[in-house]
Length: 166
Length: 343
Image 1 (cartoon, each protein chain N blue to C red):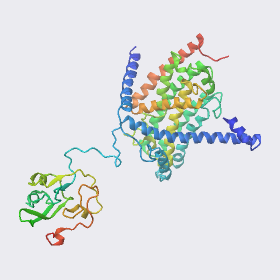
Image 2: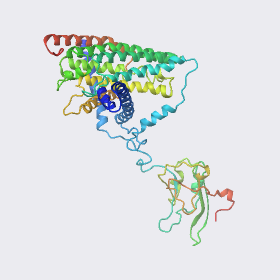
Image 3: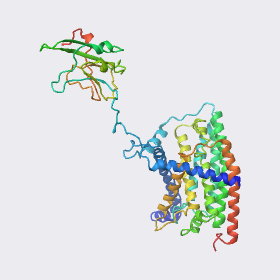
Image 4: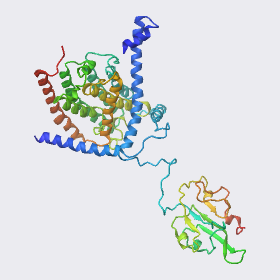
């Protein structure tokens, strides 16, 4: 009788197992996100690239060239220089240069900026074919860090230029 | 099916030539059907496995749902380099996949898709099929031995032990059905179940024999939970570790052909074969067979692998006594008057 009851309990547990898998087969939708046709919904505080922000009305950068981000960046990937605004009041950056190859996404530059001129964007498709494409000068017109294919190959390196921007 | 083709060829050739051509056309038809079915089954397995695991499976190769994935797989296997290990026994190594595949295909000679769609309706149909099932074991032992690799050898021997052990309950449960039907002819077995008295409903023998047959059949075809010979996590790939390219493709083909054949036999023996409303014999046959195939795949993605000693214990201590009891019950049923040969 033990024999038959053990067979019975085996069939019973088999049935339970089959039912669990059947529930997964019929009721649960696949959770696959078919990249690149579909994209994942990103969390609100996702860290992609550090984005250099511009004033939406005037189109001028919000940066006041206080150099706080350059001082605080741990891998020293930010460099900038500033000069007085032509209108007289306040500073503005002549060039703003951030090397994404060295950025460790620690957020310190964004937190320390007093003008809120830096923010995270949600771009995670950041492969490039040439390391120089990771060196971004944000003052070049037409550049958009939020695009999937950021930057143009001929991004100038300020030290190589020798000049302080303009 | 042979006479159908014979009439067809008879329009162009004389009677003897058209008979030979009819046999050749039969063979070609079966081969084409098996190859297409196996390609479809491979795709189906991947899709079904994916859905059980909450994912999508092949989607890209052949845009709607990746239906060309199997074609891509076959092309890949054909183009792969054929590696034979240096110290391997070359003849045995090359012959082993053939010895495994040929019986798997030969089984299909006897399977009835419809009253008239049997390649050759042997009157010892089911006996022929069971004998062929035993030949495949030899190919696995050859494969495990020839690769000159101790783990492969272990996989081959495990497989041989498993397949031989499970053949006995398989055969006995089939014999129980044969006793009830009074015939070994495949079409006769189906006819005995007309119109809706499928053998699986012939209590008490039917359901018990069906369960024993299914368990033994899953073990015979080396499917999970009985895939110890392939034991991917233990023996890399068991007896077909050292094979590449089309030789591996043959083992793969044989496994899926066997799975489909075993389901087809279960349909014929227990679920009424091609019987069903209307004149759609082949359609009902395929529906029932695919239902069993789906059940076998369902088992694969539900159960963990059985350990070697548990496997042998199940065969010898559980299935064998049960199948003997079932055979005895079938004989009692016939003696009392249910079943038995007609007329």
